[in-house]
View (cartoon, rainbow over the protein chains, first blue to last red):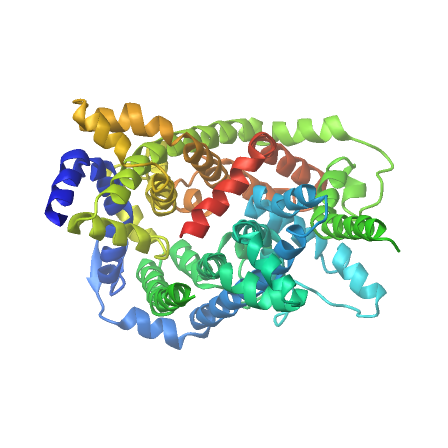
Length: 292
Length: 276
């Protein structure tokens, strides 16, 4: 039976349909990834290269201005992910309740996604201007004086994280809404007949049954947090000092400065970090999903 | 308070909070693009003393020899070709991945899925593009955008194929329809809903892309709209009215897409991610 099925599949669905995908995807995505492992161990400039072994990685981890990118990327990815997961779920709960303006509110929440990240960065840099910006004035008015949201080394990263959440929470919300709406109303009816509270329904029906959406949000938000570049670049350029440099901005800076080997090594480190964290996370989350 | 009153109150509160949090920065953007240099430099949200709308937008257009028009043209070309390319490449792939279950297909599926996570290796990509001679060209940019968009788009098509019954192809096969024709004239039209979702999502993605043009398409001749905006940011550091007018100009096309296809965008995001 199995053999017949496979034979039939082969006769209708041709592998030729993969040719364009294989050419483009392997040529400009997979192949560069493989090559990067080699060039991360060289000093190169597109035309010639010199093999230096693991020197680039040693430099990366010993130099503060490069190493800080790794920890910042972590903080950024974890915090944006956590905030989007929680706030997105809260928003989705509100927007699937009985309120009638939900379509309007959903559009409002989603809207920031349409504006390019660079534009969002520009708008918020203006709002966070140290002396004139609206945010600074509000902080001033409630008694917190002289805060420079983007110029303060210990604050700048968190300011950018807030903006990232502002822009990205709409996607999380939309994904959650779809998940929640797919849950059959029968569960809630049965539960309320048994006299459960809204909170119990949330914890024992909504959360477990929209697990796939939660997982999607976690993965999407985490990966995009790890790769973040445009927002950082348009708001702080990695500064003040190196306080907001992430892996992606370090990679760009090294490239712009002509250190192609270091830049490629940065790329490989980012790849390894994602592989070490995101792949197991993904596996773990989806295994939980099957149990539920 | 009656129940009805309560829900109305809840409605008002929710809308008010949403407008405050998400609308205020946008209001700030729009209102300042209407002001004079001097007023906009104050960066506040008060009503303009003097409106200077037409002039601001005209200047934002005319800046650097109407660079924005060329950038706009480039971005539209890149976006259009990338979207068409993605649809062709990924609909075929998604269809076959969903239908066939043998080893080569499983491998392809795994590699494509891995692409959702792997960060693109930029310098080796530039190196390959240079050796093929497509670095710093618009066709090269299009191919890169397609390559990077393949994982997500293929996943969307594969997910949607799950809702199309296999019997359709089997019947067509028995009637003597060729493999390519089965796909092109029977399956592809059935994929229309997901195709429109893909169109919109990838159009927004490519049009708003900043990182990839920054690496793969440097230089003013080929500037895309987001790079132009970034350059203006340096030049107009104290002419916020023009900078903001610029942002509005380049957001309008996406905004129009959103107004016409609002439901599609939202449904598509959900469909793609829930099925994972």
